[in-house]
Length: 360
Figure 1 (cartoon, one colour):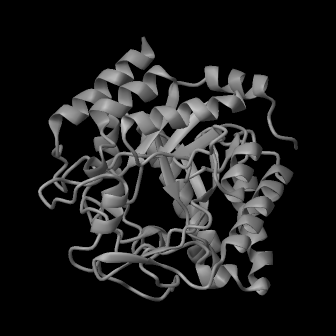
Figure 2: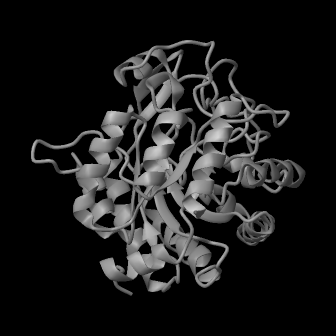
């Protein structure tokens, strides 16, 4: 199976509503391993929270899977994912599954048998990479990586509940949040991340899914002097091989528009699969109308405050590096309190208005 042509992906795009959704973990899950684990898959919370999302008008969800859970319970995670898809469909939400993820901000390796509580006052304190940084470096695991990708995609290759396959979240992200600051993971695993990303496209296309494939460029703010929308080989490969373009944009409005301008060279529909960080002026009231007007799919980070604590800010130096100001008086990510009440009613109104405009 070849990469979709520009014409075919635009036809597909025009046959679907403007995708507007969010990145989701249940409020009772500290990370994606706990989300999908057989002992902690929280059906009632998922149903309740996705109902809140449907009431706002959202039509899609982006969600990470867990290689570690699949390793230990392959049939079980498929059953739970199928149940998740059924719940989402019932509420009018289509799903963008993400298969791999290098964001391991906790510095911990995935442990199927470990039950972790969040570290107080730390943003995303138990985030674990998938398959995990140590696992990525071990050659003996790669056959299982292939089996994992092929099993998920072959099982749901013709399933309309799956909107798009997002193959790999932030490949090569080395950040670790420690003691109120952040450092980087050692050793450097970037070359292995790129190799896995490349193989993911091969394995996924072999299964001939009806859904398009993407992998997000996550450092697209580093626009080259020639206007190129990437500064590294991983982002370049992701953009050049995706059926539709996806990117992350934790940045102010001007930078977002510069990123979008630079990505137009690919002549393909676009998704912004991570954005919205209030401390650094990535704001719903400024960014969402532009995403809708420019017909760019929108998946901001977070729905309900919970164990991930992503309503708390990034470490101070990371916030300031993005031109922001750290304050504990303002939420960083997320839209709803644990009760389902909005953190900011005006933001919810903005989503409703833009979704209505998109339907008009």
